[in-house]
Image 1: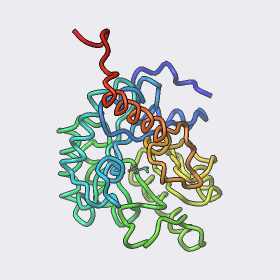
Image 2 (image 1 turned 180 degrees about the vertical axis):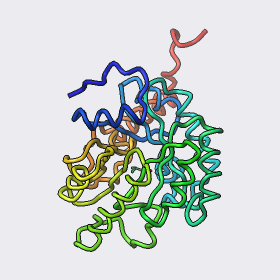
Image 3 (image 1 turned 45 degrees about the vertical axis):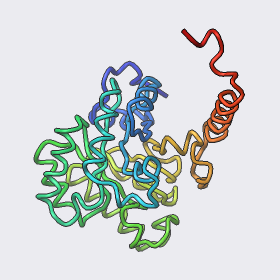
Length: 271
Ligand code: KIV
């Protein structure tokens, strides 16, 4: 169902209306101008300039190394491409944890220097002070619970989170705290579908899932993963809409062959 198709510009208020109207929210990551332009033209609701740029753009093993300056570079490229989608930008590791004044100045830099529309932060009650300070500056905040990749060295693995009762109850308490603080939406990553569905029912703000089943208010995927650019990443939750790895490989091979054989350029491809 899509009742907000004709909306010219997606805002946090429209996302709230979508939840209330039962319209699912579509969200994909984006890191550069050309890709963001296609995603926005397709009619996506939210583009997340994710710190997954650290993995898929820069080739790091984790999201920890990406810097605030690099996030601003990616976000400003995306913002220049986007006409309709809400652009949410990840606050990178080390730019907000444990220091709410630094958190505010990181969020202000993102908003001022990239033109993004909101920030996303990983964590629950331990980051409420930072969230509160950012919200008082009028900057919308999206939360992120469950598997939070910035804490990968605490978790030790990328397996499904909150399977045990205690962690599930903690997650529900965190989600309620983020809602009460004023977050406009929450991403739930890699948790049992039943738990995610319960959170989406008990909480009024939109819940966007990744590996969290279908009982939530919207879905997000990393664009490189759903296009099949990274052929080594095949988690159960991922639906691949293309096998771009193979297609691109084939195109590059054909180009190399054409250059080597002298077939490219031909007469109509020269001046
Ligand atoms: O950085 C990212 O891409 C994310 C999504 C996986 C939600 O946080």
